[in-house]
Image (cartoon, rainbow, N blue to C red; front, side, top):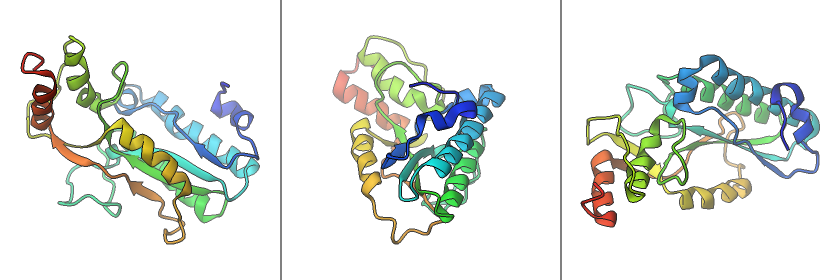
Length: 216
């Protein structure tokens, strides 16, 4: 089913639903290059969709929305946890913060039971490169193994990223539907998903280990 969420969000929402994953969006570099499109898709469409759920769905429905690491910018604390203050440095970050806040407020008002999951960088993603700024963290492994070139947009090989595998993410998503929120404040529902910290050099070393030095 397809729908313009700004005009017909209620067409894809049903009262019988137990949970909703909201996975539409324009990612980081896409939002940065087209400001108006990023606002429409990531903010306006999300607001219309949340409002449709408020009017149609049961208040106990679990609503899962993916946020991401671009909510954070410099300066970063030594340890980034759920309490770290967002300081976004790209348009995608504030758009994330806006719908995180909306989900918190809709949950506080008992319109639904919402969670916002701040995704790590997922590596290695299958398929073609995405519009995410961090897409190279999949491409630098995926493309060489397929005999293709990948441009790494950073020179600092110590550049760190918070990552997890697609398998880890897929196993965590259904868990988020059944996660008890009894001890989570209704107005603070954003959660950083677990992952590991790796550098560009770590990724290059892994490529050599798995694919051979010729792939590097």
